[in-house]
Amino acid sequence: MQPGRASRTAQLVAWYRALDVVLNEPPILGDPYAVRMLPYGWRWPVQSRILRAVVIRLLGGPRLRAPIVTFVARSRIAEDLLAERARRGPVQWVLLGAGLDTFAWRHPEHAGLAQFEVDHPDTQRSKCQLLAELHLAPPAKHRFCAVDFEKTRLRDALPACGFDPAVPAVFAWLGVTYYLTREAIVSTLSEVGSIAAPGSALVCDYRVPDRLLAPDEREFARKGDEMLAKWGEPHLTKLEPEGWPDLAAPLGWEVEADLGPEEITARFGRGHRAISNYRVLTLART
Image (cartoon, rainbow, N blue to C red; front, side, top):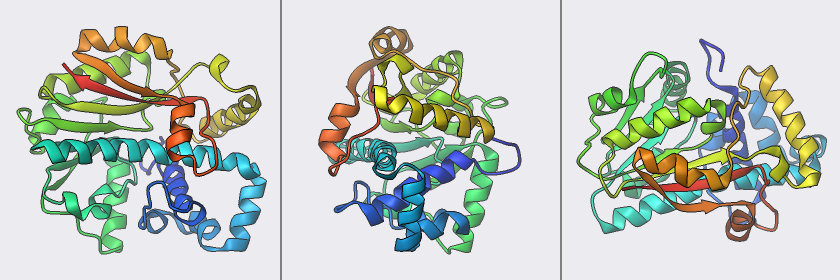
């Protein structure tokens, strides 16, 4: 992202979440706040049926439905896991790279949980200003935790915001890994593991090598990469699915689930398939 402004990819994901509400019946996530989190230019294709049809056609027609499935379903997977863990006992919720996510407002039933939004100071500052303009106050146990990972260690910053390392947590690390180097991914998993109590879980998505893409998706992925590079937010790392057990185990994590496009499509597709270059991984703290 560019210094001094919110991430454009965070806005893109919010746009997908807003489209989920108007295109899918029932919605995969059903985020009623997503459209309000968008700049006006992003809102028009959501709110106007005619303009929406034009924009969708220009951006690939039915092909655009695939990233909506993929990038909305990953949040649903993490939130379903949190709901399951909350039924078992005490749990904390941590959004690593929260972007414009609105979990705290969408889920009043979880208002009693300790919730932490971790993000770059610029993105978080922009979000907090927007929330104030929309008169959306967070729950009492919600905390914003601004972290510049080039200057601050997560293992120091998160407890300073009120996180309790003795209580299990669900960490949602979505839309982040592919913007990092492999070394930064390993470092973050190690840092999270150092403050995650046994019984904690981490949900992240990751990008696979291009050779694993469906042939008809490779050109679409290439154009997406060009757009991200122009935005100053290029993808840096693609990981092999079979490499995760060996990567995670030395850091105190084991693979609990690794969902590919087939599983995501079957659970959340609403008649459309997920794109094949992303998978959603659940790691359990050992």
